[in-house]
Length: 193
Image (cartoon, rainbow, N blue to C red; front, side, top):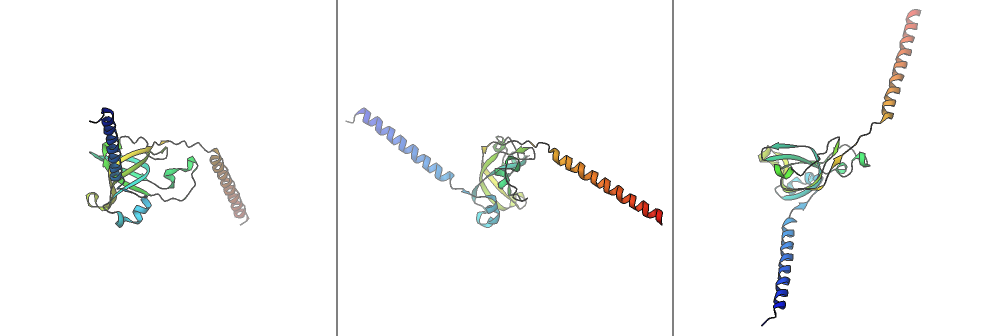
């Protein structure tokens, strides 16, 4: 007959083994979605069409609720990581964003949407990519199955730059001065004729 402690240890070891096995299986299912940048997604649309993918980036614009679903836009260019106000470098004007169709309650945890006055929340979105979604008139989008906020956004301050005001005032004064000099010369030439 087995000792009760040995039996209890066997149950504990078996339970731990089953827990680890379940975790590994769950992680395997969750990691089935390939993590892709939006630029790569756009460059290789045919490859990812109809497949489950994961993107990460800043939520920008605003949430557009359409009944039990909503549209959000996720942007993963360099400005989404660090904008100019936070010390990021100017890298051009193009943005890399993707429309995401998601159940409205999934968007409730999103507090900040990136606009002039806000840095948006950074989210991870997993869902099915559609190169030309027939449900939405042929738009390119992702039908999200999960949206997770991984970093909260914040307000961005834009301090008034007085040197710009001074520059505009100085240039305006120079234009007025040059205009008056030109007008005076024309008047003098008109008197001579």
